[in-house]
Length: 427
Image 1 (cartoon, rainbow, N blue to C red):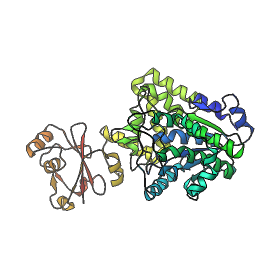
Image 2 (image 1 turned 90 degrees about the horizontal axis):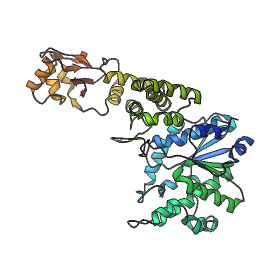
Image 3 (image 1 turned 90 degrees about the vertical axis):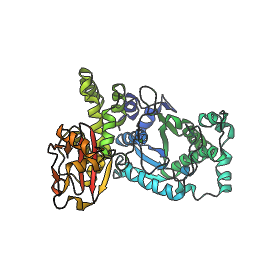
């Protein structure tokens, strides 16, 4: 087994541990089972989850067994950690759908066919759902001092706010998550929990509960929260979170986020999110410093992450889309690929019959697509060389567009000038 603590340390992924001096030796004694929790607040993982998933992945590659725990029970309550107000409660149907979506994505990052080190994906509703309220209070609650809960930052910070408090539901979250650790120890021999730095209170609460209930010493580790060099949260786009599902954030959008990353954040993200070793990362950063304008660091990061999250096909789609936005001709793509590439571009449905007979004129198409407000404006754009169909210039104002001009089964891509795109979908 490799020294996972040393690896996480050079990757700057360790924020706190329960035993800085002895953790490395403890992990080297034998394979350990390590878990991280993920509350299913959406039907997809986002890039913030990727931090913790990559830590589980590194533990597994170092010879340990990872458990990804989905919070079908805790997700019904809502974690108050890092929140200034109570989360909206989700219904069971929504939670089940969210869990299914997240579980399928987790299987891309962890190995489920590795013998005794095979990863597990579990749902804490499977055991919490069997508890009655009074049974839980008697069997678990009596071991959990309220004064310990009150010292945790996630609770204390909310109680100190004058514009809101903490509901009993949220107050109970810590107790439910703490019992997860005890249950995983009982059933799977799990001895360590990892999570973001905002989870330190919940992690140590689980360790304390296991000591009181089982007389065992468990361990915990947190990683830094994912922030930019200016301190703001990383992984936010104009349209919301940076999702790992292609349907919510296309491979092109995902790739472009990392291409546009600030230079100050590249090294950190290469360490956090890629499987590249220390020497290779140093070499990439050295190349980047020689000519920052080429964005070698961002390009390597974007390629590694797009391949990891979306596979080689997703990376190829992202690279093709990037070329298209820089003017490459569009051909041999499917409707789905074009819709993903141009997810943020205006589109309009047009009757398929408009392509029959002589076809639609380029002037009509520019107006239908919203790239020109009037036919006169469309003609001026065309005569000035600014009209494109599938990134091929059209300079004849009388040009007709038939089915042969489609870029895919139903889609035609129009462009005005260098960057203004629109789609016409002929249905």
